[in-house]
Structure formats: structure tokens, C-alpha cells
Image (cartoon, rainbow, N blue to C red; front, side):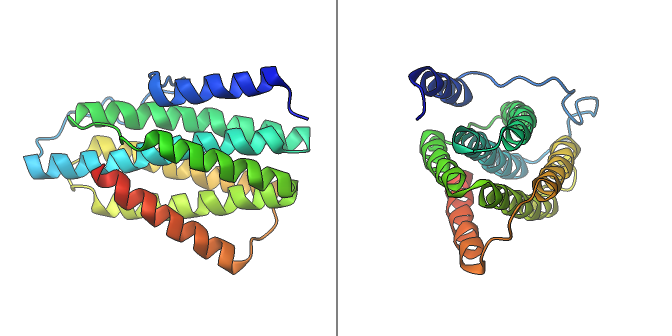
Length: 208
């Protein structure tokens, strides 16, 4: 049974993720690069892409919190917690870049968080191998998504590109870590459902 203090800690983390500025131990990728002169339309487009990535990091935080809450094995919990710490840095990087581009964060972030937390908790309840399998597949899909965004960014936006490249490398490593810890391969229909849900989030977050 989950104790009350554990639930209060999770609630505090959720509020800080959604409403407090994220922090990073690592330097922000590309911070040494000069700001590019972007046309207004390109700046809005880059801000929209970074808003999607920030919303994705909100989802990642919630997924990891839900998964670690219901994970059975302490080693699995530690792997999830380590990945969550790196995702917090991604949250800080994308948040900062959105501000630099004159954009705003998604208004639907609380919805993304709540839904992702529920999915993560459900994955954890199924069992650690499936929990890790869900993590691995999520990260693989995020890598594909980031590679797409790297193609869609304005060519001269080197600062956003530097952030997404490091995020892509981190996400790929998280997937490998999950497999190393015994992740199960998810059934095809589950992978498809995850891709469809991701499309709903990314298309909505670009505009809202």
C-alpha cells in the first residue's frame, strides 16, 4: 500500500514540475552560441517546436513518477529516478529556449502530466519487465520525434538544434538502459496506440 507521505511527495513534485522553473546541473547546450537572426515566422515555428518538446518533457516527468511509484524492484526504481533527473534538465533547457524565442509553454501541460502519470503508474503495476518495456518504447519514439524536429527547425537556429541533439542522445541512452535492465518488447498494437497518443499531444501542444 502506498503511504500518504509518498503521495504528498509526488504531489509536490507534480506542482513543481508544472509551475516552478526547472533547474539543470549541466550547462545548457548551445548557450555559448550567438543568437541567430530569425524571421518572425521562423521564430514562431521554432518556439512552437520547442513548446512541443517542453510538453514532452512534462509527460516524461509524469511517466517516470508514475512508473517509479508502482515499480516493484528497487534497482528499476533507481534507473527510473536517474532518467527522471536528466529529463528535468531537458525541461529546464526547453523552458529557457522557449523564453528566448518569445514563446510560451503549453496551456495543456496539467492535462499532459495527469494523463502521463496515470499511464506510468499503470505500466508499473503490470510488472517491472513491462514497465521497462514501456519506458524503452517511449524513449525510442521520442528519439524519432526529436530527429524529425531537427529536420524541421529553421536551418539557422543553432541554439535550439544544440539542445535537441543532446536530448536525443540522452533519450537513446535511457532506452538502452531500460533494455539492459530487462525490458520486455511491447506488442505491436500497444506501440501503435502510443504513437497515436503522441501525435495528439504534439499537434495540440504546437498551437495550445
